[in-house]
Image (tube, rainbow, N blue to C red):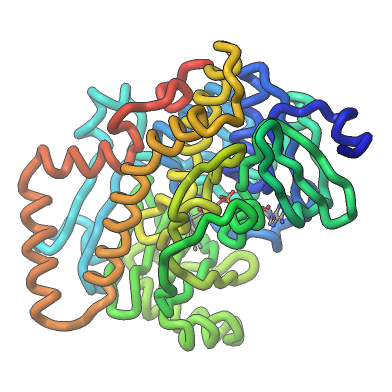
Amino acid sequence: MSGLAEELQADVIVAGAGMAGATLAVALRRGGLKPVLIDPVAFDAQLAPTFDGRASAIAYAAYRQWRALGLADALDPHAQRIEQILVTDGRTPGAAAGAQTPFILRFDSDEIADRSEGEPLGYLLENRHIRAALGEAVRAEGIEVLAPARVAACEFGPRAARVSLADGRVLSVPVVVGAEGRGSVVREAAGIGVVGWPYAQTGVVATVRMERPHEGVAHEYFLPGGPFAILPLTDNRASLVWTESDVRGAALKSARPEVFQAHLERRFGEFLGGIAVEGPIFTYPLSLQLAERFSGPRVALLGDAAHGVHPIAGQGLNLGLKGAAALAEVLVDAARLGEDIGSEAVLERYAAWRRFDTVTLSAGMDAFVRLFSNDNPLVRLVRGVGMAAVNRVAPARRFFMQEAGGAVGDLPRLLRGEAL
Ligand SMILES: Cc1cc2nc3c(=O)[nH]c(=O)nc-3n(C[C@H](O)[C@H](O)[C@H](O)COP(=O)(O)OP(=O)(O)OC[C@H]3O[C@@H](n4cnc5c(N)ncnc54)[C@H](O)[C@@H]3O)c2cc1C
């Protein structure tokens, strides 16, 4: 064991200071444990406007966790309430607003106001603001951050996990959490395989400013190339997630601004008046990737390292945040009971808690992508009938809204807005 390991005396190494890893670290610290965050990218570099141009739809239960962790003051000014979600099958944008067509799903925050305590369906936040708020919280809690530093290898012994960094340092802790995204080194070192496949689709992301008010309405259009989402942001802007084939995605990314604008106007329509692109265009390859297990002796997987899903319903980070809430609760409670927090039995509690929800949701998203990225007339008819049925049956609609709000099932304390 190196001298540094003794110096740190950490309870948990969180490999990966992305949004899931940083949330877990803050939750653990609040619960009295000592986490160390490791990331090859310095926090300050994560905040640059060119680092991550995405915005995230955050379910109201996941947002409650950030409030419970003290992030409300930093996040609230940037959080756009989602009051309504309109889903349309293969029509031009704007068709859903006020229309009577049955091939539309309409979710309204008023319908679940009694159960969500008046909270909206969720919030839209730009990732750079989330990263900034988490960076501030990590500093305020005095959490040790090793960045830039990269986890290169791990060994899982009977009493400790030994983590080797790329710069030669070796750290020893009771448990290591792999939160380094899809290419998790910790997952690989633990011998945990993945299942999944690429979608041959690219998510093209841009921020636009609109002429007419969006009124907190999120739109999702299912088009043959993939879904096209208009997600309302503060200051009457919107984040677009425009899914296309890889070839079209690459062409859009490299298109001249006036060419991109022309394609965008054709896709977006005129229902929100003139639109102007703000900032760079980003592209993300899309795939499904599920870890075969979420834990093992002295190791747990969190966020995209455990489950990478299609952004069709904005659930990827939400799953990671639910995982952070569950893992923090399991580890903090185990420590309070004097258990070994890295034991297989403790970590299996986390895996068992999250497995069913994660696998069913990921499979559901995958089926959705296949069903909706398809222009076969029969498939269109079937999905239209399905959407109409869900729309007519209020309990079914409420179920989807509760699910999207992240408030179903056995909720960890942080997702109920309670302290650990
Ligand atoms: C277009 C698009 C739109 C999306 N929209 C939404 C949405 O609306 N709502 C939603 O909930 N989700 C959404 N998602 C999904 C969401 O963005 C991801 O699920 C989320 O960012 C994953 O966070 P993470 O912290 O698990 O992983 P990452 O963000 O991948 O972070 C991993 C971190 O690990 C670090 N790292 C890498 N290698 C190492 C190493 N060897 N050692 C240490 N650290 C390492 C990296 O530098 C990084 O900081 C969207 C995704 C896409 C592509």
